[in-house]
Length: 90
Image 1 (cartoon, rainbow, N blue to C red):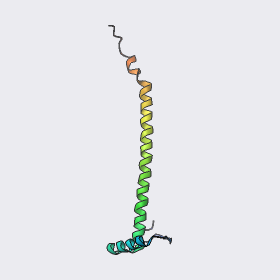
Image 2: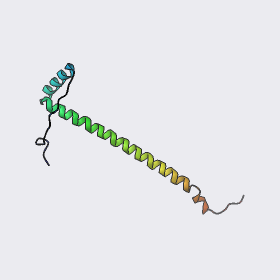
Image 3: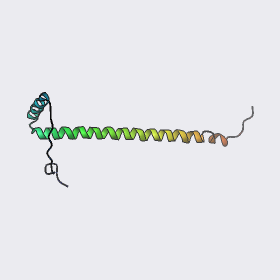
Image 4: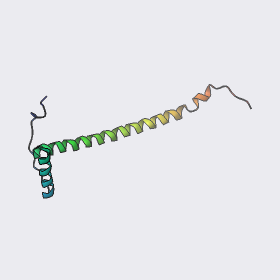
């Protein structure tokens, strides 16, 4: 496995509004990083965030399915506890 510094890279071209380009240049200067590094880190951060959102949605759906299954099981057995109780006459 290659380290992050030695991974194969591909070149892409993007178009940005002039004000965002200027902000990007200023931010890269403040961070002491090349613009390409700042863009790459920003894209990775955004993609990780999107992956976390997808995972959270999948987990929510799984928990909801499990809750529905638990409710069905409870409904199936709601009278079974009473089957073994002695009859009470009033």
